[in-house]
Structure formats: C-alpha cells, structure tokens
Length: 112
Image: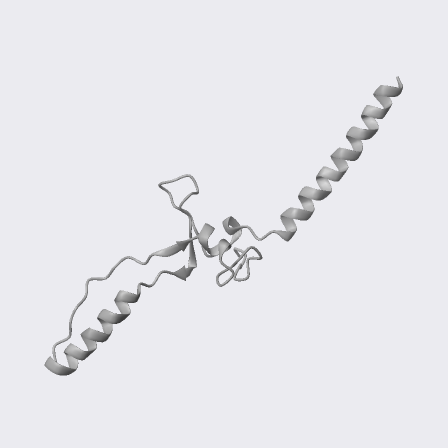
C-alpha cells in the first residue's frame, strides 16, 4: 500500500516537472522550422533544409563580374551571363556558425 502511494507521488512529481521543462524549452528555443527564413528541402528528410537569410556567394563570381566590367569598358559589349539558381546555406551550418545565427538564433524571425 505504501509502495503504491509512493509510486503515485513520484509519478505525479515527474509528470509535473516534465510538463514544466517541455513548456519552458519550447518557449526559449528558436527552432529553424518556425522561422520565416526556413526553406524545406522536399527531396530529403530535413537533412538539406536551408536558411534563406544566408545566400552563398562564390568569390569567383565577383572576379568574373569585375572582368566583365573591364571587357565592357574596353569593347562596349555587355557580357550576358546565364542566371544561376540562388543557393543558400544549410540551416545546420547557419546554427553552427556564430557569424550567422549561431545556437542563439540571432537572425531568427518567427513566422507571422
């Protein structure tokens, strides 16, 4: 009888504490899935989801655009480049690096 009573008391305390902990963490954490910059990758299981806040830019593109400007001023002919699809950093990378969001989610904005 005493064991049953202790079991019920311990279960109740653990249940209440567990509820408090899950409620508290869901308020404190800024999950990428709830951010307006989150871009779901439909071809995978959340492994390649991207953050539209951080666009990848390759250094070669800047060098090529400078060369294209120089050619334009020399020849007067504009160089038309094919448009590349925009590529964004992975959410995982954005949360790893403090220059981006970091673990604190500095650039996080909730979906409105």
